[in-house]
Structures are given as structure tokens and as C-alpha cells.
Image (tube, rainbow, N blue to C red; front, side, top):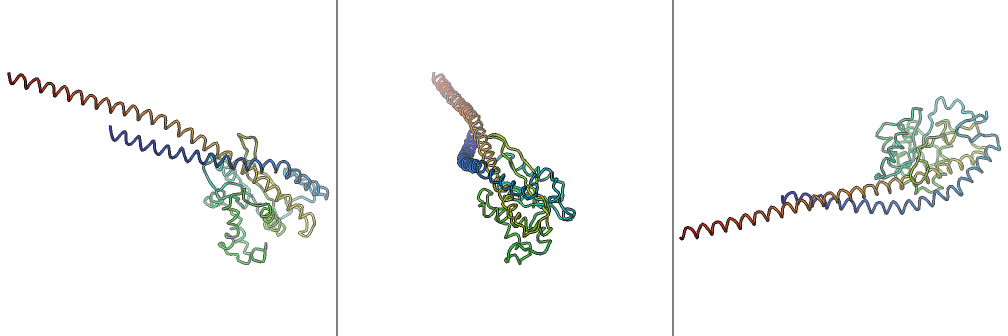
Length: 315
């Protein structure tokens, strides 16, 4: 009985520790969720109108920006699509403890059947793509044998390329500045013009409401038949960067919302388990006390019986 009580006490201490951790993580997630909400509201109020303005500028020069249907002859994807893979940017977080948030995004990644190379923004996406032998952009660039994004891109070894992509994988996506995202967008367009990739897709968790999100996969940049020196290219780079940056804001909002909910559920479950364990402990303790009382009463009765026997033997 004593061993059973000790086992229940150890279990209670373990669950209490888990509950404290879950509560702390819930508070952190709530604080970051508020920041992510502010960023999302800013994106909706300021970035979306700017994106619409850029789309109008691009369309004014005869280019369609409708990612679902391209009818303008100037935006028809050329022969490069037949030999170059598309690029899929996957936005995930770097940490777990957020329910099935990452699993739902990575399921979408796993369901992609088109020939594509992946650029994960977030460590969870990188680990999944790497562990499932999917085609990482860094491996694709290494296979091409050369980098032309900057004068420092002379190292075409796998490790050298990996070091230049590490920040995209390991830094939480919400910490990427707009300048960093714009730099990435320019590099993507440069590779597109070089015929190394075709259209660009974006996979992330899009915001629906405070309780739900939807994993989307859509073409964010088609292959435009334009010269790299054309003025329209800068508008395309800005539009691509804004699209990625706005998606990052939505993804962060959904990730922290999912983590807060997961930690709340964990805390509630821990509290429920503690209630059951405390009830078991009290019942076991009562049973132990009852056994001890029975032993005391039995011992007393035995002593009284012995005393009576001694008195009888004297007489």
C-alpha cells in the first residue's frame, strides 16, 4: 500500500510539472499571438492594398497576375516549363507543441505530384522535406553547379550552399525582415529568368477565423516572358516579396493560435488527470488508514485476550 501511495505521489508531481510547463507555454503563445495578430492586421490594412496596386501596374503593361488562369499571350509559360521544375515555398514553424498544425501543412507537401523543388521557410518543413527525400532547392542548385546571385556565390559545394540557406530554415519565419524576403524574391526571379525554375508556388496555413485555418497551395508567380532588364521585373519582385511576407504573417498567426489551443488542451487534460490521481491517492490513503486501524484494533484485542488468558491461568 505504501508503495502504491508513493507511485501515485510521483505521478502527481510529474503531472503538476507538465501542467506548469503547459501553462507557461500557453502564456507565451498568447503573447506572441497578440503580436502576430497585430502584424496580420497591418498586412491586411496596408500590404494587401499595396499588392493590389502592384498588380494593377503589372496588368497595365499587358501582363496577367491572376494565378489561377493565364490568358494573356505575354504570360504564357514558355518551353522552360517542360525542362525546369517549379519552385514550392513551404512556410512552417521551427517548434512543435501546436497540435496537427505542421502535419496538415506537410500532408499538402506530400500530396504534391508535380515536378518541383522545395524552399522551406521554417525548420519543421526543412526536416520533413529532407527526411522524405524530396527535392530541396539547395540540392538542385548544387546539381546545377553554379550560383549567380552574388559575387560571394562561388562555392557550389553542398555545404557552402547549405550555409547560405540556413537562415531561411532555422530562423522563425516571423523574424524574417521584409528586406530579407525581398532579397529572396529577387533571387527567385533571377533563377526563373535563367530558366532554372518555372512557376513559383506557395504552401502555407491561410487564416480563416480565430478558430480555424486552411492549408493552401497556389501559384504566386507564373513565368513571364520578359527580359531581366525590363522595368516590370522590379514590380514582380515586389509583388512576390509582399505575397510571401503576407503569407508569413498569416502562418505565424495560425501557428501561435494552434499552439495556444494545444497548450490549453494539455493544461486542461493535466488538471483532469490530477483530479483523478488525487482521488485515487485519497482512496488509497483511506484504505491504508483503515488497514492501520484494523491492525491496531486487532492488536489491542489480541493484547486484551492475552491478558484475560493470563488472569485465568493465575486463578
